[in-house]
Image (cartoon, rainbow, N blue to C red):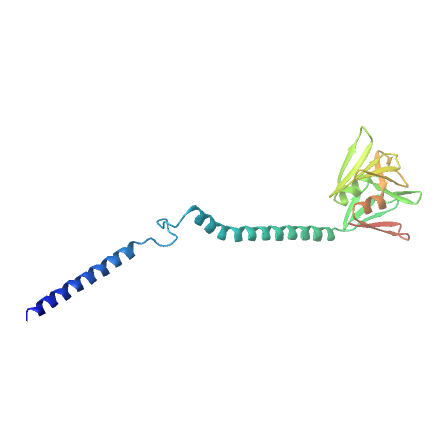
Length: 207
C-alpha cells in the first residue's frame, strides 16, 4: 500500500520537470536572434560583404546595360537628326540660296572656276553644321565637323584634312572680301552628297 503514494509523487515530480524543461525551451527559443539580424552572431564582415555583393552586383550590371542602351539611343537620335537635315540649294550667279524651304541672301553669288563650283565658305559650312574659323596670321579658313577638320590656306592648292596634306584643283579664294571654296570637295569631306543640275545650273547638297 505505501508504494502507491511514492509512485504518484515520483510521477508528479517527473511531470513538473518536463513542464519546466518545456517552458525553458520556449523561453530560449523566443530569445534566439533571427538569422541575419544585427543580434545574429553569424553576421560577420564576410557575411555582410557577400550579402551586399549579391544585391549590388545585379544593380551595377543593370546600370551598365541601361547606360549602353542610352548611348545607343543617343547615337540613333543623332543619326536621325542628320538624316532629317534639309538639302542646301545654290544656283550659279544667283545671290539667293535655300536651306530646305528657307531662303538666304548671299553677298556674292556662287561661280565656277575651271569647271569647279565655288561657294561662300561661311554659308556652306554653317549650313552643313560645321564650326568655321578664320586664322588671319596664316590666311587660313577651316571647318570642324565631328572628327573631321579641313584647313584651306587662301590661294593654295594644298589643303589639310585631319592633318594630312591633300591637293585640290581649285584653291580657296577671296572675292569681294569673302572666302569661296570648292563646294563638292568641302561637302563630300564633311559627309554630304552633292548633285549638279546642268539645266538649272543648280547645286544641291544633301547633308
